[in-house]
Length: 429
Image (cartoon, rainbow, N blue to C red; front, side, top):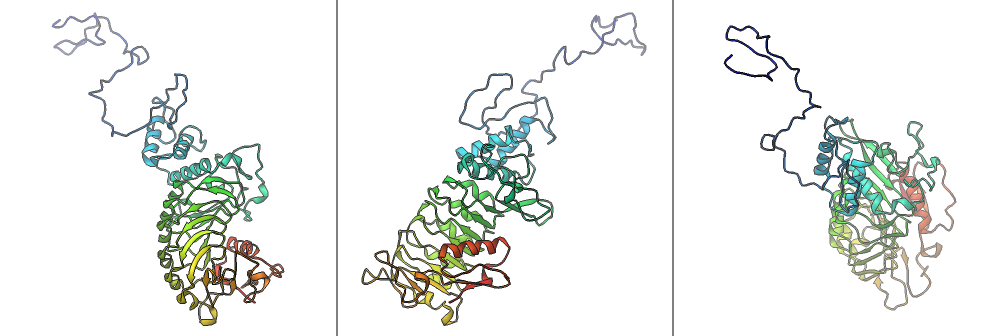
């Protein structure tokens, strides 16, 4: 023959016939001889910055960076290898904080829901996991991932079509985690987070920046947790649909970020009994839908009240007592009072004496307070606090005699949770 070969699997002659006198061999099995593709011939991949993967066969090591288990030989339900899924998720989320890194590691290594990179719910699931890790989730009063703590099924939705609330970081949809409500997206394909209500649930630490990922959030309620601290993240300004923000009774401090005043859908701003400081930015006048502004109990608020507050034509409640705001109540705010044709029916400030003159001069306030003495009740009943509530289209309400502002706020939240607009009720004598 023209070529001498003792290892060929098939031999041919010029006449086209087979030379069967030479031995033939079965094709090599990949198990016997693995195929090696030189790097220069392998398909080019996009250069993605990633944390070093943990090799499955090697002993695990402790690291401060998020790691993803690697299994290049298996194909997941996402129609890609595990390492491809992990790298795509990393590229999608780009965690920058320690809690974000923990959330990423949980998503790719622990979460039994096994979300794919193309899943539209991936960002919100990641953001909520980061929120859990940042806010001391394992110590929450209700429905922590810590199974030694309670998760009362009685706190589930009133809807018969909604399953009981599940623990955070469980394998169910994040829409069923305790305190979370979701709404159907515009294309009717995805359930997106619309409400996060974890009031009085023993949350602690600083609200993480990942909260800004929840850009469909309408209600954000963290009041009465007492140990939430730090400052407000600027990413709150990335929640264009937010209507209610209630952070009352915590330890949050610092100046209000200007990004907060980009929330043009905001109707309720409740920040009382915290440690906020500095002046109230004039940009508050940009929030034309505000109906409730509750700032009392922040002793380090200072400066004068901006005249731009007179542009809040839907405002029904403004409480700025127990602060260090000074000067004169802007006439533009007084002009909003119901007695002058507006909607404002509760205007409370540090306008009582002593000291003399008072911190704020206000001849139009419905209630004056003084941090130096008992409340001046000359313009108000019930010790200068809210006089009572009248609800529209509500058949049964509790006795309002002697109701204080905290009780009124609780009733207010009960109304909101029943999808009633805050403009359906008003303060009355």
